[in-house]
Image (cartoon, rainbow, N blue to C red; front, top):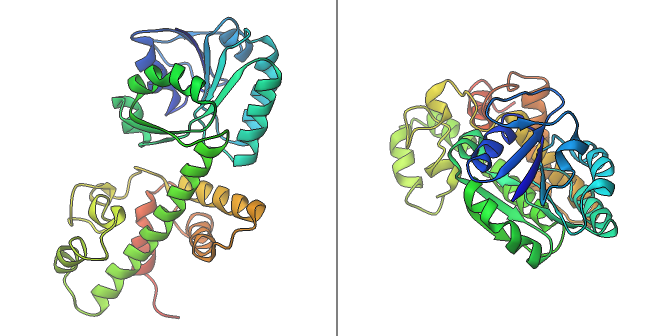
Length: 288
């Protein structure tokens, strides 16, 4: 396939590099100039004549701007595959715009971080027409290890933010529990051995334990260098609450997680740290 790839940051660059091993890839980024990828001088130049245009952008506003630039100049029937994590409303608006321009659109945010992008082990959560999903499936197979078709346009974003709302809530609960165990005199390893094989089992505990030296290797064992940065968790929790408000959904735990991560990132010392560093926040605080 001839692929245009717009957005060559920490995630986009390795994804594009993996595709370039077996496809004709032309990339564009306003700042980054990664090696090993043919570069265009503009988003339009990267998108023109491409069979598939992949975008990996910071937010919905930028996605809408780029879509406005490229859709009218993409060839008829081409697919706009957006792998950004954005608000559901923007994803659906861009899909409608693509259809009106004679294109197809898939929103497919990813899970797996920079390591997954580099190693080609990402998970994609996709929304959009089944026919378009089938067309880009071989690209998902190169960039990742799993792609799930979640239904209509915007449902990829919906799946991503629902998943990460659960992740944010369970990580906070896991961190709270470790600090409570500490203050009750319960050894962290003993707590892990019980919880990881009992009803408290979760990905936050079993696969990404926030306590250093406990469980499998995680960012906690590397001074809480991200992994998945706390500010990115805050972004996803903000998206979840935007969606909840639009859908009139009551999500008190999601809102509480959002507020705690906002405090951690904006007024405490969480910015630039892994989201599991929330443990250090609770270690410093008492009940009051």
